[in-house]
Image (cartoon, rainbow, N blue to C red; front, side, top):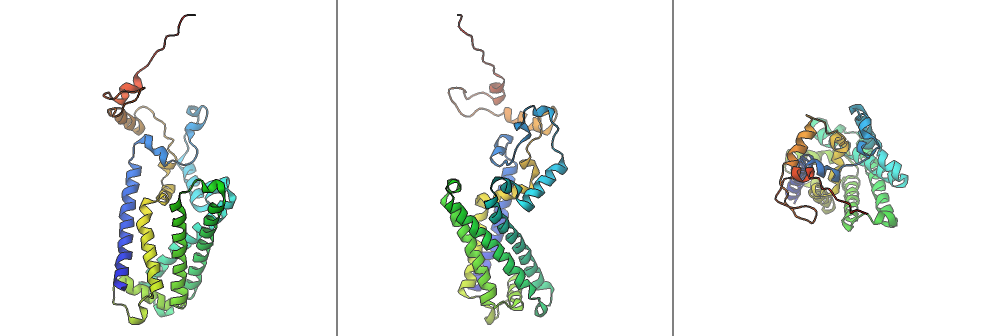
Length: 290
């Protein structure tokens, strides 16, 4: 049982990394006119007389992206009630990621018997923040009619799954391992090194279920809208405000797109020509004499 769960867990991690990388590469390499589906925030081109404005400098982009990642400024401006729970959830998740890194690295690098109980407090605080934030988001989006209209049923199933995973993690640490950090790290070391588990370290069904639910979430992640959070770190997509000037990279991409054939037909456009021919076509209308 333990070997099967371990295989599913590592397999889901590998699948999540590969599938997410492929999806991100697909989004990044998408044609310019499709980037609007991923674009967030205001654009330089929304402003009147944008051609007289200077381009946003890289340091300004970096500050904006950092503010969005660290403080979720966009959500704060739109809805402070949602922002509070979302921020609490993100802080908890970031702390949990660091906690898992400490747990996995520490399990093979430190003397397990001397592992500090502070690790247990760290894990519980992180889980508590994430659970309260996630629960608050779920309740708010279920009870607010305006917010509810934006989210499909699978969105709520996702949050329920996340809360179940967090509860399972709390159970595994505080109930199954009785909060004993050395025993927990010894179990993690056995997983990392693929050693045979000692009988006393075999996970209970509830503990194995925690790993199983986490594996399911990792399989779901690449195909969910959550993947777009990675683009908070990709400023060229978030700040797609590079002007189309002569000799620029943008001009090269636009020229290549305009050289593609028209593959669909409508009343205002006919197939069989290239897009540059359609774009350059000027229709003149004659006004009837009065």
